[in-house]
View 1 (cartoon, rainbow, N blue to C red):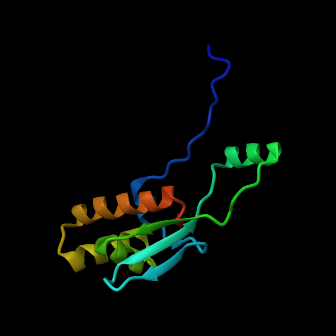
View 2: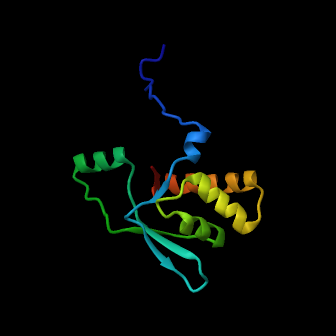
Length: 127
């Protein structure tokens, strides 16, 4: 028996529930449309919560002025533009498939991977 093992209850939602969620953009993300039509996202660098807490206890100042940048390609820009706070992930996938003439499953895989990556970076949330 491992006494030091941390047990976390993971909340997983089904695929159907996930597709009915509405992706919303983080209000701290600035977007700039480039001449190419692509979007450049700028967002603040954040530490992991436990690192920020440790730094605070040790009196180490946190630099909140640093920004990361992410340039989206034309496909990413399309998905970003489709995220209007009203469309569900399923509706975004359908619009993406229609625009690029993809099979629904192909579109679903691409868009959900992209949304997951944006979520990991803290650029979007799901409502």
